[in-house]
Length: 116
Image (tube, rainbow, N blue to C red; front, side, top):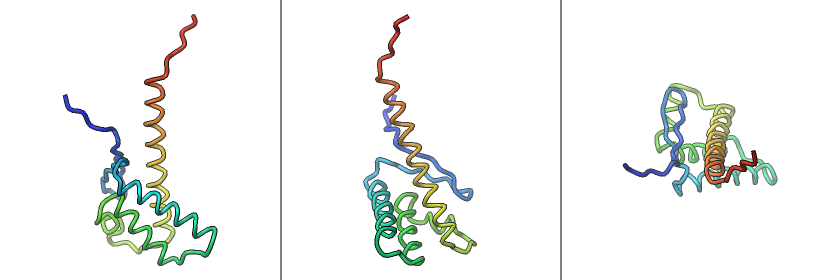
């Protein structure tokens, strides 16, 4: 029997299947960078739409794969709203997946209290 880490999240976006390895250093760094850039842009100087789309495109490529942005937006006009929704969706799915993993570990290793 083989052992594999349970760190792979499957997502479907615009009829494309992607696997996100949340333990991958590139993915972890991409999440940190996009989060920090968004926080910084709201606190300091606002990021331009083009800069936001470029940063998001880089994030999507790092998390979903190099050509993911092109696959998702094939034959579509790239809008700030769609890119924002996509980035938020990816971050939400990663967050939910990590929370579910943490809950499994907690439930598995927390002793039950059978006082009956």
